[in-house]
Amino acid sequence: MHAYANPTRFLAIARPLTPWLLGLGLALLLVGAWAGLMLVPGDYKQGETARILYVHVPSAWLGMGGWTALAVAGLVQLVWRHPLAGIAARAIAVPGMLFTALCLATGSIWGKPTWGTWWEWDGRMTSMLVLLFLYAGFVALTMGDANENGGQRQGGMLSRGAAVYALVGAVNIPIINRSVVWWNSLHQGPSITLGGSSIDAALLWPLGLTLLGFSLLFGGIVLMRMRRIIADNRVAARLRRLADDDEGN
Amino acid sequence: MTGVISGGGQWAYVAAAYALTVLLTGAVLWHSWRAMRRAETRSDALRRDRK
View 1: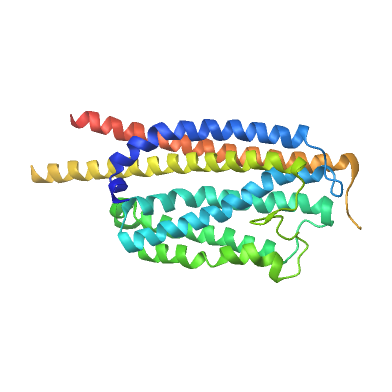
View 2 (view 1 turned 180 degrees about the vertical axis):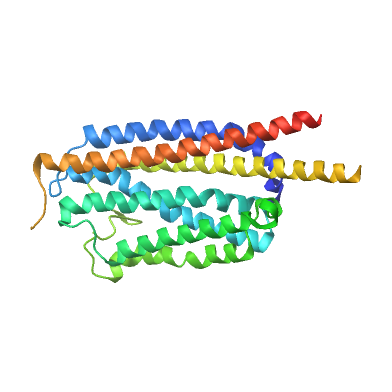
């Protein structure tokens, strides 16, 4: 793992990988969305609104998966001081927050025609809203970090406080997952478990395409944001060296 | 059930959900790509100047 602590080595992989992730992700998304809108039949109970599933579930998956990755990155930085871990956590935060917001918005749009309400303060929706606030707090914390030391903190690493915050926030992930089991909810119970799926196979297959497509796209977005942070760090380091040289002369 | 919408009216909700997804995903994609290109161009230019 420490072999990739070197940004140059990381960039040698990230640069060619980025267009592949974005291209493949977009292609899978287009096919999955087209199938979800045009090919599969409407649900026998919910009708056409069930088609929102193909964008709502991947958004929820990326919001929760994003924070899980962010917490792992925080742990890796705290334990091993791996510099790329902090950069990865920073890169994940904004797209993770966006997909969490998208999950809440598409869920709300789905809720109105199905439940007759845009919002309900039940376990699933409230814990997902808490996740959105956690992301917003993390973004604010890391922006504060970036403003320290004239704009740079040890090559893009997180502060100890931000890394601990990422770890503590991970407590909310199992709460979101189990909320529909622990509390009464308008939201349906878990549809896809390790034991199988309660969604009919005729409706399920486009979900696999959009899940994979959104995940690859998310990976591409995170790589682009990591590349940006690394490039900014290099510019700052060079400018510092130039300033030191000038002072030396 | 009170408030439940059925029939053709449902497509408006589906369209709204997909449009919002396209808009927000497109915005974060474009912003990330533009910021990366700008930062890498600046970094490359500075490296060339040093040589």
